[in-house]
Figure 1 (tube, helix red, strand yellow):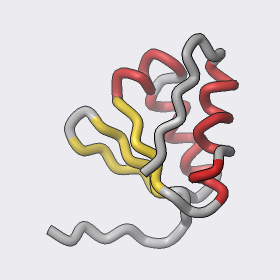
Figure 2 (tube, helix red, strand yellow; figure 1 turned 90 degrees about the horizontal axis):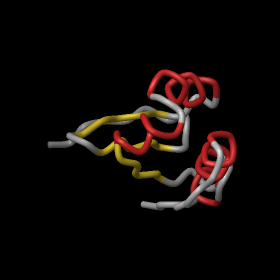
Figure 3 (tube, helix red, strand yellow; figure 1 turned 180 degrees about the vertical axis):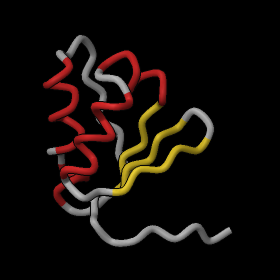
Length: 77
C-alpha cells in the first residue's frame, strides 16, 4: 500500500498526488482515511475520479482503498 501525504496541499494537488502518483502508475493500492477524503475533495468527487480512471474503490471502516487498476476485485474472506 502507498500513502502520499501532502500537508497543506490544495484539493487538486492532493488529488493529483494520489491518483497520478507512483502507486497509481504501477497498479498499486492507495489507502486513505474517509475523513481525509471528505476534508480534501469529498467522496463524490473521488468516486468520479476513480470511475473515470476505471480504478476500483473499497471502503472498510474508516479506510478507503483504491486499487489503481481496472481489473476486477474479489473479496477473499
